Image 1 (tube, rainbow, N blue to C red):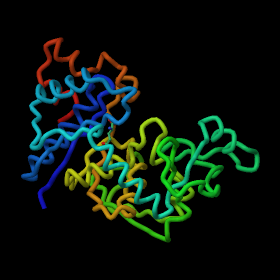
Image 2: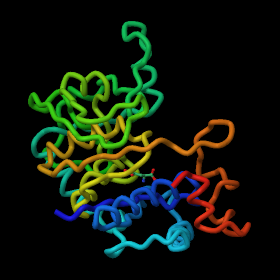
Image 3: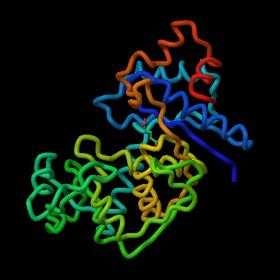
Image 4: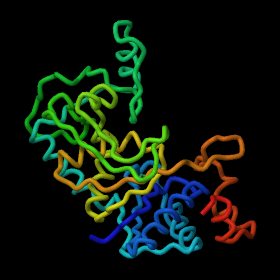
Length: 284
Ligand code: GLU
């Protein structure tokens, strides 16, 4: 099997030093292993994605000396694939309709008998409000949020190989049990009302479609990997090896954000820095 890595930015702002680190690390790993590096544009959030940011991604990566071996995969071209996977999960009765907004969830999760609200990889752990409501239609609705009914997933356990490190130094074989998933992750949203899919569902289907064997990304997504591994199990997809890396931080120790224009690659370029300078700054 060809060793394949990918970089999967969202075109919602300029790439910064943290993106350069992730992209170069994935690119270098592919080259060192005689493999391939692929690019995916994660543009399912059409309210935030902009064509000019997508163009800038191509320019910045080319400037860094990164090339990709297949045409770019754009998530906005794959809505039919995401919809098909949702149909499968719906037919297996693994999804439920959820009408709660953020405030409803916060109120239910903070009710006195619940203790303090628990936070999972996707924010507040869903308190279960809509979970046991019966279906009003056999057809999968496409205009509401759909959550994964973790209580219906038959007993399972899974694991993934971590060759980098989670935020607390987690490495090697990482085990996940259904019990842990129910309490620490909960009924996550798989189809958002405004996009008809979700980051988690799309990323899992796309990594499989692109034949990615090694996912290289920031350790802010380490906990979300538990969701990805469960979805791979439910959809019959392979689980790649994961390599989570530390995040690049500014001098004050704060993680870089897209609104941090000062750290944008285009700014360094305009100021006369070279790709070699960037590599040195991020320790590659
Ligand atoms: N699109 C995500 C981001 O820009 C990355 C997702 C991933 O690497 O799995 O943060």
